[in-house]
Amino acid sequence: MDLEPLGIVPPDSDGQPGRDATVQRIEALLEEDKIEEAIAAAEEALAAGDGNAIDLTFLLGDAYLGLGRAKDAEAQFRAVLEHDPDCPSSRCWLAMSLFLQWRFDEAEAAVQAAREVPDALADADVIHGALLERRGRFDEAEPFFLRAAAAHPDKYPPPVRMSREAFDREVRMAARKLPRQFRQCLDRVPVIVQDVPEAFLAEGEDRDEVAPDILGLFDGIPLPETSEFDLPPTRPNRIYIFQRNLERAAKDRADLVDQIRITLYHELAHYLGFDEEDMDDMGLE
Image 1 (cartoon, rainbow, N blue to C red):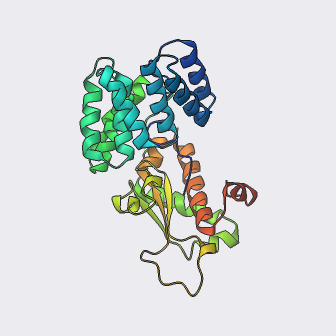
Image 2: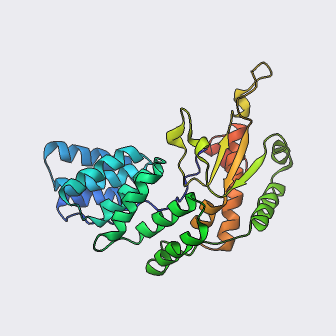
């Protein structure tokens, strides 16, 4: 199920922390993608009273968000906002934390507040656009993505748009490029293209593992875990590909086509019960 997706908003490490040595050390860990080390260091520093507590709390929330721990991130950003209600970064990432928890009404209120503070981040426009997409208001969402792209083209290239017909064609072409033994497996698990994930996919015990900005999802029981004696599943096995999320994550059309292929192959591999190393070995990377 994991794709290590880019997501709606790439994890950030450029908030507005201070420059004391403790904060700098944790910033460096985040920049090196040593997120769990950064969390441990921030928690230790906060417990010991080292460094700027507000800055460390923000960095801790930033690190949690990078790991997809949205509920933990929410708590940290709320703590920062108690001391600094106009912190643009904390306002923005609070909205993102709520979005990732499928709490869209709260996220809409939070992102509106994030867009109204002085020095509002362009990232808030992206989150606002994504929330409009959740409502199916695609035409209204587009100007927000384009505004963010104009402000930060390297971080937010304009979304690459395809018609559903063209997108479906690319999915079929990716399937045809699979080795024969894997291509035959797709006869047993349908591939469904949706604009964005529907809420029912986040229901149940694994809710925290399904984010609304995921690129693809295998929903069902992996093949190695099934047997002929099992009861019929409550839902059939399916692979979902989320067009709007992929379009938003792609740098250009060629990258979108490549991401469609990668997403399809990864989700098929999850159905087959492969881990990441297996995917690489079998040519499904």
